[in-house]
Structures are given as structure tokens and as C-alpha cells.
Length: 244
Figure (tube, rainbow, N blue to C red):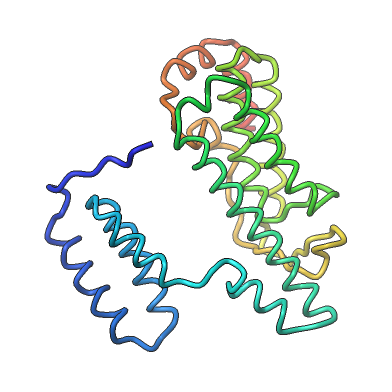
């Protein structure tokens, strides 16, 4: 996949943002500001088509094993270490999932076989590897996204019944996430993450927007899949369930 960019996108606001961030990374001693400035620069440089500058900025950041999450686990022991290890596992699974999907969409030829279906199923299994009891806390959100995308892939490859099973599973995880967003304190309950506190929040209707969120990741083009799956009577029945 080639990221589309246009020199005309170098509007005055983006150009000024680059100047500000370049100045910040040269002067600030605040790690948070430095990291945020690098993040912005990487994205803007890529959007401008200046990939070499983007790579140079990215190379100023630490490697994965020197990340805050890993170092926090190394800095502690006992229950505190268990908590940080659990948090690291969950965050890494979440980010790994996103990066693997980006790896898939990077090449449209990946979609000529069932390989993407197997990969997405594997990502879902990764969350069960960490949380074998199915309590994914806030990471139900990522699993929802994976099931929505999986349904699109399954339909496209002719597994129409499986596609609707995946949509039902996305709805199941949406209900689970809604139950956690009740303003109360919740913890993960699986062995490896039992000391990790779930990130809570105010009640939100997540299920109701699933049909608008589908298929979440939009690449490759899914217009034909959308036309076909929404013509199936089961689609409207599924949408009705999301509104209950």
C-alpha cells in the first residue's frame, strides 16, 4: 500500500506544526512533549511524502523492549510486577493486533486467499490466550473491531454464514463492554492479569453504532461486500438486535 500524499496538503497549519515540533524536539527536556512532537512529525512527514525524515524521527525513539510498559515490569516485583506485566501483555496484544491488520492491508494480494481470515482469527485467539475467561475489559473494544472486519473478510470469501456469526460475536463483546462501563470499579479476572484494573467510564451505547462502524478497517475497498451483505435479510435482523 502506498500512502497517498499531495504537496498541496502542505497547508500553512501543517507547515507551522512541523516548525513547532522540530523546535520542541531540539529544546524540550520533557519526555512527554518530546515523544508527542516526534509522533506528530512522523505522521506529517509521511503525509508530505518525506519518508526519510519520518524514518529519521522514528529512529530517535527507543526500541520496544525499552518501552515504559516493559521497564515498569522490570522495576518492580511481587504483585506490583504482576500488575505491570499484565498491563504490558494487554497493551502489546492490542497494538500487535492493529499492526498486523496494517500489515495485511499493506498489500492487496494478501486478500487473494483465506490467509487474512486465519490471521484475524489468530489475533482474537491472542486475547483469549491472555484472558482465558473471556473478560477482556476495555479490550473488548479491539475484539469488536476484529470481529467486524472478520465478517467482511468471510463474506468476501464466500463464508456467508460465518460472517453473520462474527457479527453476532461483535455484538456479544459490545454488550460485555457496555456492562463494564457502569461507573463502577472493575478488574480483569484471568490469572495473568488479575491485578490489572479495567479502564472504566460512563455508560455508553456501543452496540447501537456497530452497523455504522462496520467493517471498521476500510481497506481493501469493501463497497461490493457492503452491497451484498446488506442485501441479505440477516443484516437488518442483526442491526435490529444492536438497537435493543
